Image 1 (cartoon, rainbow, N blue to C red):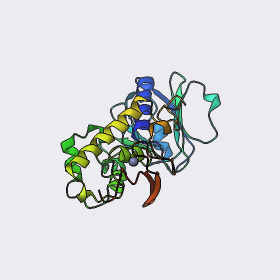
Image 2 (tube, rainbow, N blue to C red; image 1 turned 90 degrees about the vertical axis):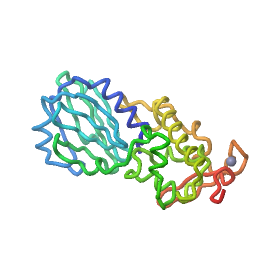
Image 3 (cartoon, protein in one colour; image 1 turned 60 degrees about the vertical axis):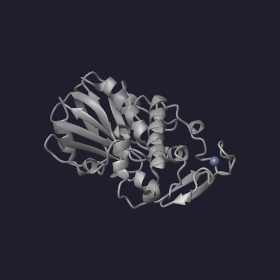
Image 4 (spheres, protein in one colour; image 1 turned 90 degrees about the horizontal axis):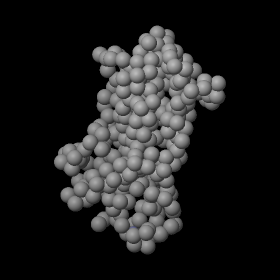
Length: 270
Ligand SMILES: [Zn+2]
């Protein structure tokens, strides 16, 4: 599932490629991903020009002229890829946006995903209820975010309403670098641990973005990034040994997800 680094990379590529292009035609092959009738998309989008493309957590926001935003969430296993030749689109294409110069992009979705069109004065609760962008959070902001919170740290960070864009892939390396057990109750975290966590979030996400995001999700040009398992020191290596202390890596359940931890470096009771 694309997380913040993948969305940042795709958004930058889209903005570079699509800015200034004018929509010619929109085709939709799946209705449940929409927030309004297909006819609205077909009526509203043509003649609109792409002004900007920005990441918003796990969403991509395509500003179409001044009046409309196309809000796209690729869900799990979805892809959004640029084309210059419409003849070679995959069979599971759910939407196609074509521009007046003959280029365009298609969207495939596998497991949920959204393709929403929102007017200037319309609200969009699914994005308006999301938490702050992790990369814009100062240490002070981050401390404030954790203030008076009672839950465990991993579920808190994965809940998009608290902070937007972190998912179960990057959280593996984030918590290892921060040397935090995923189920630590937030009130037990010391100032130093919160600082380490803030630093780990920044470093892991920035590193992934710099490498073009993960090596298993496709970007706007159909290529994968360079952030892979070699950049994750213990994740997905059950029974391997922690490179820091030599303890055996464990995979533990964390609610609906699981987490690879070093029990020595990430103790539940430090
Ligand atoms: Zn260790």
